[in-house]
Amino acid sequence: MAEIVILLSKEIVKWVLFANLIAWPVVYLVMNLWLKNFAYRINVTGGVLAASTCIALGIALVTISFQSIKAACANPVNTLKYE
Image (cartoon, rainbow, N blue to C red; front, side, top):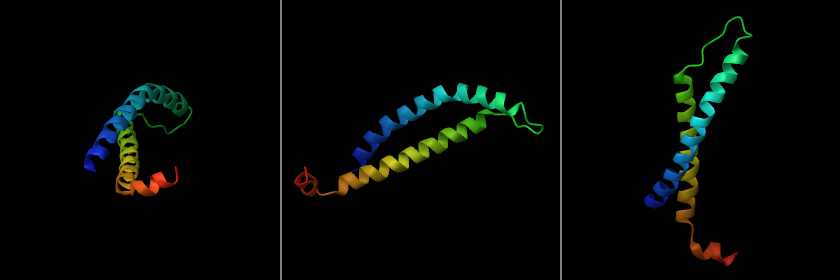
């Protein structure tokens, strides 16, 4: 069962990291333009982007783990009976 979770998790982690690499420059530019209009503004730093990546990875891994364990523990006879 652990092998199934690891195989699916590897694939999802690759896609989440790829999506974050594409999103980082876009988020940085858009947020800096938007925050220029405020009197009290903050800077978008690498820490904020890294935290968002960790949160996205955490959500993806929890979701994939839950679904993989649920599928691995299911009885295949019950699944095939309805198909």
